[in-house]
Image (cartoon, helix red, strand yellow):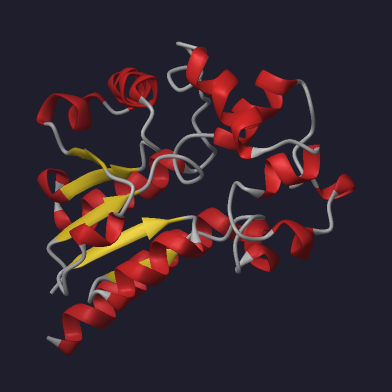
Length: 197
């Protein structure tokens, strides 16, 4: 039985791509009219590649901006994804699991973001910042994430996973129904796994 659900922040709850578009005043490669989606699969690395920058060109200005992370918009459907998780395992068993990329301001900004949009998570300390999310994997834990490179190792280490369809991952063709797909998979997955126990 699933006891804990971990939900990623960037790309699941928080609009990192939109934040980059605003920060650099450019359209991301994931906008329908300007993208060949398959060319930019593999996570957020597609952004600097499409813009002709290095990863440092992207991350340095973000790290210097004290409001980048706290100023990210809430993605459409984020509350629905969170509330679905709560309905399945209870509020105390839903945790945020987000990468920090080794950036101190990232953690501070994400803490401010959580306080603004998910105060219960912030107050209850149900959040974790880790680059290697698979360290949290176990047979009774479910990770909801938008990055193939987080979901695959988590599953390989024995955890359960749902890859949220986004333009930058292997489920990009389902991106138009991302929220209902994720919510339905969470419910169906939980019921299926519960019945298997």
